[in-house]
Image (cartoon, rainbow, N blue to C red; front, side, top):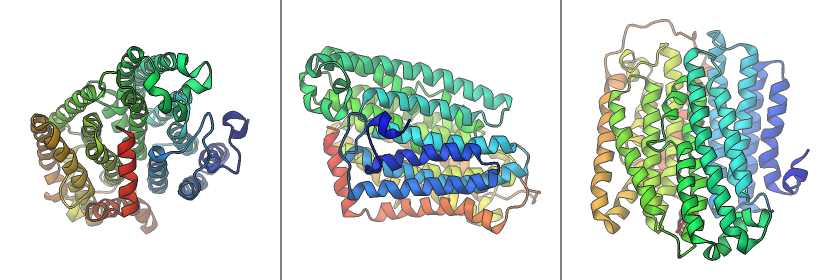
Length: 497
């Protein structure tokens, strides 16, 4: 069946191509006999999807009962397709070296590329769904596709991580389904039966008339359910294992994209709650979970010996900060949250590009076995150094700007909350500085044969190009944000309440 039949859109709608290209890519990549050709086709499909997503700015399609584009999701669609494209480029070189090390068979390599496009499709469907049920199905499908990729190496540790990911996130998404059902029941007396009571574009205009008690109860289940997928403490246990044991490009899109998608789903429901004057304020619960994530991850950073687990906990920290910002609410805090979502996606995916190259060059993920990267691998080492400075919130990076705005808005509205917020940020900063200084600037060990074989000049471009592109974007964003982008964030910040 086509998207025209399933979701009511045809080839004249830009969303048709944004969703169709990854689906076509899944079929082609699964059938291609050559995994090398599959790597290039994966890049081509991801690049074409990104190009088509840009066309949505020129011609925003009409909303249907199942799909829509508005000011909120259009920027996340573009961000998702861009990071999906750059990660596909990095994957080509990364997967080639994995095959050289005989860690993956040709069948597994083709499966990886097919599942990569399926993962992009599920995220884009979740972001563009104009139906609470379709969005829930898409988020659950994203879980299933990433479970398969996390277990790609078929090692005991990878299968255990995938199993933990599947169980915990499935429980969470089950709670989110119950919350979604309660929202439908709250809307049904006003909207009537059927799809109208599940369409975002219709719900937001009538939310003030919905039953507030059901909305309050629903948001608790939605916060716990989608919060599990975001990786908020204490619901985070799946995230470090999934990052550590899966292929590194999947860590990049998990941290850079999927966490955003889950938070987007939660924020959509928060908009409904905020539009009803008789509901309880959802902000304090989000602030509490955000602060708990900041403190837990900050202290856990000191004890991580695995470089991928280290940056997994860094992702928990930053998603906690973003959740805190949206919990504070208001134009400035929401603007800061949106900016931080963007900066974290670009920076953290770039960091995982560097981590993937490091683990392949050194043959280890242990922090105490990696030393002096700026000397032994200067292009890679300095790229990671700048990215780490960015994710730690150092000026003049874009992450510094978003963190500064979060702290400023907190000081202006709740000065007492600013104290634990700043303390948590300082704890995390000190942990990153302590754990990574020797790795970047210490005495490098004697040269050893690369565990995955030598890398060609072209392979180096594929590995390092996306890293430096992301680093450049984050640095530029800290110095200058284009006026249209600022207006765009301001508009969405007002929508979020």
